[in-house]
Length: 489
Image (tube, rainbow, N blue to C red; front, side, top):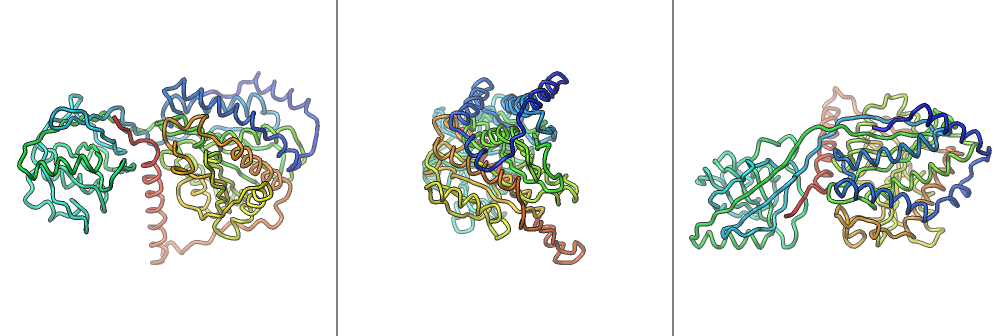
């Protein structure tokens, strides 16, 4: 990990001393957010990915290189006006290095890996395929009685996807003696991502996911009395690996009144993550580059580049979970910028309540003034605002859409420099900069942090606590299942 050296800090201080003491204004900062500078940052992110296996994902060299790139800017270049630290944490790393499925004639079959899939022996598992009953009403393979009479010992059951968790189907398969399984999709087209849950790693049989038509064909042949065999090879790993958040804040401004901006720095394993979320990370870096030139901050501004977001928001959840109560109260508002340059953008301002719209409305108004049609959307649980909402900090953000039609390269190798709408990216970055500067100067009327909670000893309190726990588990697992772990061979 690259850390600041004495010489680098000294050089930064000398640079800072030469800066003019020019007061910050929203208009000055807005004017300095320029397309060519944003493009330069994204070019660097793409190069980092290209030089490190095609991605900038948690647990892999491209993420560490991305961290070093940000640190060179905020410490070596801007250290005179910023205080920066690296927050280390451990996060679950999972990767499918290889998955291969050979069909009854030895042919290669298009197969998809589920997150946290159990590995096979190096030579794979070759065994007879057997059919299992379909129950579209309740879910196929979801209940004990649906497996009655099925002897899967030493075999590979063919199971239809749908309704219940895939891990439940695989647990029943294992209990009935299966050595592996093939799950076929329950809808036409390419299967969507899914997770088996990190807690189930090592407890289930290896599995491959295939398209609906493949499964339907094999099922028809099995029902006609054919004897079919398949071979599955899975090389997967699950372990804890170190990751890092970068937290950088202005030296100026009231430390008891903090405005915070965040974006995740990691990509998925499938690609370089230029839009997701190189766009948000680049916007923050250019805002920092502008802010460090000015004085006159009434309120402190804190920037965060989050790690392991694609693995379940792990960096931001770690940050918010470890914040003491007094520090939580100092953060008056949080802005989240995740995917702000989608090629066919929607202009979505994320805000649920009047408290959130304290920050959401200025973003909305800025976008509207500049010729686009924004719309409000409620928060979900799919980005780094989640931890801040959980601890009651008012929040807002900009999002331009994921998947078709907004970003057809979402979580794919083609999320590169050709996957950016540069006009939208610049506009959203300017909006973020303008509002951040506005809040750096004035937080009058900012809503208080929501600190209400149930009595933890009451029946309602126990229910709420369980709900919070379950929600966080679901966030981590479901978000990670869409984070590029799905691979096809």
